[in-house]
Length: 355
Image 1 (tube, helix red, strand yellow):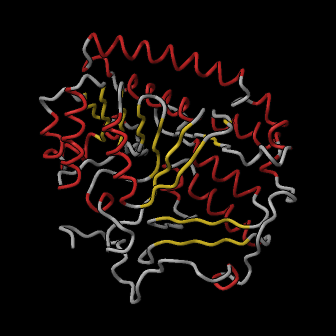
Image 2 (cartoon, helix red, strand yellow):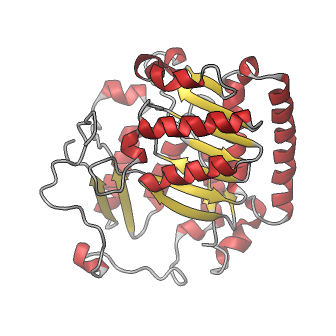
Image 3 (tube, helix red, strand yellow):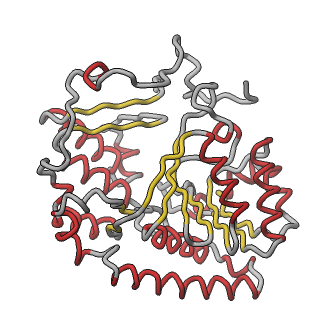
C-alpha cells in the first residue's frame, strides 16, 4: 500500500507480473531472432556514425567502463551503501525528494556524512519542491549539506518547458549512478512486484564517470553554487575540477576515450562491446535537445529492432502548438519510429497502458 496513486500505476493488471522469462525469445515475440554480434554489420560499429553523434550531441565515446543495472529498490540500497562509504564527496541531483520513511533515512545518512567532513551537494527542482516537498528539505536546512534549487521552470523562455529532471549521483568522483529514479518510497521500496513503481538506474565506473562529474560541476556553476558554499568547499571544487581535467587527459593517453580510437576499437569485435559508453545530458545548461537528437539518429540507423519502455506515451504529430513548443522533436522521433517500422525494423513498445 502507499499514500498516493498515479494514473499510470500498473494496478490494473489482472494477472501477477512476470518474474522470469523462462521460455525462448520467440515465445514472447515470434519475429525476434538472436543477433550474432561478432558477425553483424551494424552502423553502430561504424566510426563515421559516432563522429556524427559526437557533433550533434556534444559528447563522445568512452571505453572499458563497467556497468550494473539497478532495478527498483536495489538502486536505493546501493546509494545508501555508497553514501556511507564516501570519503571526499557526494554529488546528487534529482527532480523529486519527498519526505517519507525511506527518503528520511537517506537524509540522515547525508547529514551524518556531511558532519564527517565529506562535501555533500544536492540539486533539486525548485517549483515542485517548494510547492509539494518543503518537508523533505526542512531537515537539511541547518545541516552542512548544500541544497541548491534549480529554477529553470521559472526562467524558461516563452513556449518552452525546462523542468529540471536530471538524476545524477557521483561518489568521490569514482562511481556514478544515473537513471530515472527520484527519492520517494514508490521507487525506494519497490521490489518490482509489490505495486510500487518500476524504474531503473545504471551504476557506472570508468572513464564515463569523468564526463558525469564534469556535467555535475557545470550544473553547480549554472545554479551559482558559490553563493551557498564555504571557502573550504570552494577550494575543494576548484581542486576537483583540476583533478578531473588531468584524469580526462590521462584517459585519452590510455585510449579510453576520444574519436582518434573509434575505428580501432569499433572494428575489433573484442573491444567494440567492451564497456562502451556515450554519456549525453540535455537541458538549458547544455544542448537543449541532445537526447532527442541521439534517439532519432539511432532510430534512423537501426537495422533489426527498436525496443522502448516508457512510463507514458503520447503520439501527436499534428499538434502545431506542441510541435512549435518543442521545436518538433516529438514529431520527428515518432515519424522516424513509424518510418523504421514500415521499413521492416521490429519495434516493441512497453508502457503502462492507460495512455
